[in-house]
Length: 314
Length: 252
Image (cartoon, rainbow over all chains, first blue to last red; front, side):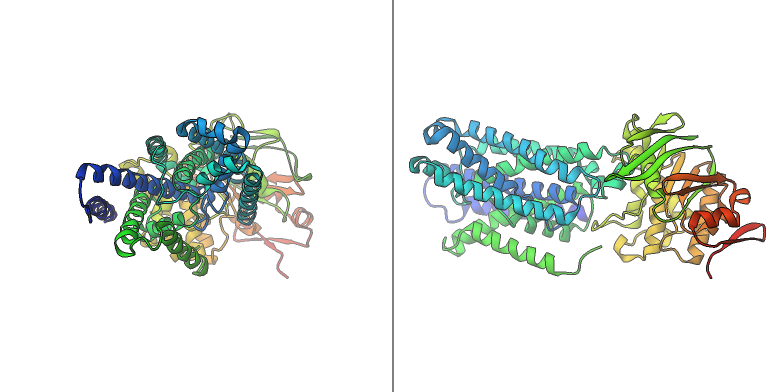
């Protein structure tokens, strides 16, 4: 029954992808398919990255309302991007091939993420309130530092930095797409390999240790994967706050299971459907008067409010 | 045999356990009793390697908990704590099924399904097995958690207050089931029990802790006396013999 739901989701996504590639197409098919194909690939890569990162993070923090962005993960990435421009100068940063910059920023995010959140999440009894507070404050800190650095940066260099922090769904950096897709696929594969351990991890630290799971190692592995995936989505489309929440909430509602073997693919498919479908709506129905980012964040924000307001689940 | 040697533990500078040394032979039911703050739960969690041992050593049949890989230990001992899995969509059958994880690491076989059904039957959960964790009462959840530790099929079961949330009938039934588990299935059970009378009625040996130190140990018939229990809990206790069991009267 749950497998059939996955198949239905996959079918829906395929239909939407076909629609995205072909609707309203006039002119040279070769050009259109390449152009739209790249944008479609970007949407799918970002969707998968955000979906898997959020599911992983929620498992490791035992909480359905947190996302890596609430914890300041993507703000940290923006800070790293800005910091790089600040230290290398606009020319220096622009001289680095985009892929090298991305690899550097991604690597730094993994290290920083492990340091910051490894201690918070690996400890005996992760106090939820302390975690959320820490994440919120860190997020504010990183955003403020990034803003401060931007003020210090030479206006010429600033343009380079600004471009990276104002990325959006409409202006995806396709130069990075190849590397991002690879990294995304690798991280998602890593999450898939860990799927049974993730189920045990979701039971809580004491139970997981009692069942023989190396808890600390599993948490650190998950954080590395989350950092990789957040790097991908933030580098391609910038900070996305609530979208992951929307996707995981829908995935849990639909699949009604604790098994990550079902949740991970469901979340990725739902993310794809939302982004591709959303972009079609924005382009064809709304005539580009709204942006996908706005629509998606709005829906995600609603999901967040609903989750916070409804009966706390045991 | 469980060997506990010179175990000391402090939390934030506060000494919780001081130089506890014990030998618990294999087999039977051992009850860990003592007043609040005696260190019983801490000792159990150190035994189950849930907290890191700072001073001393603990060995299960020669396996040092500080040095043996955690997955190997999960085949030797199982622990029941007060933490309940929250928020996950788990049925009771799913929960008990997790007890098999150390054996199948995510790929359950028919042998595992058998063990799960055995555990469900033993703890009277078959009718409830399909219900979700948040749809059953606290007592039913508690029994499911004990069933999970049983399904783990380990020589040693460490249970931290297994009778919490259980009414009279279920508490008695659980203690009797634990007795059966020890006698017919050859497991060794160490349980922290809050109510000393359950220990008196079902345990083979009593280990009493007070303020982080071993107060006394031995079979219930020997160590459960007015003076000993009164000194342990700091309140007057009258111990009577009723129907072949010691009963501690500490209610009025």
